Length: 218
Ligand code: CA
Image 1 (cartoon, rainbow, N blue to C red):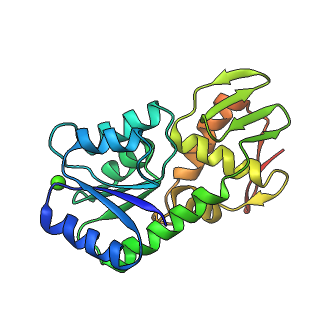
Image 2: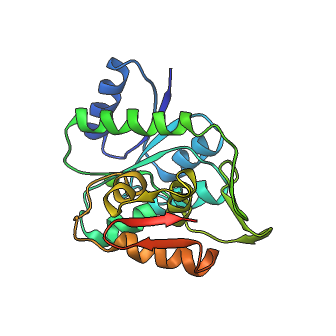
């Protein structure tokens, strides 16, 4: 059974999540500081991390940054009271897989946990390779014609999704739901912005715009 690390300093919230997850059959570990969260995440003690942003010691953003810098791929679901678009983007850009604004219903959190664990277990192929592009899904390294390029967590996920469906058109809505994993404003241009970032890093000609439909990796 999957082990869930819960990093939350408000005991009322952590015990609510803890009880619910144990009742759903998960093994849980509750910590109340960023330092402890980081320690357990890096030690490989958990299959998924539920991470509050406002934590004493080092905050959730910093925990995520260090977890990703160490190459740990465990799914992270961020909890935060802050609901501004900037904080949401900062969490996701920092390597979170999903985002849960407080207050939330337990069943919503549970659904996201199950979804993210399922995604993680599907990611079995260690390396994706398409026409000179290579993504190593374990080390999170990206190579273009043998040369390493730095991709942010979100750019990496977008490249991964395009590569998994190389030669096929993916709509903005498909990319939003698969890469960002939650409901963005459908009018958001975040997909176009990130496709632009990827083009500048991977080569402008690789990602084709299919007018009125979406994007396709050649
Ligand atoms: Ca807090």
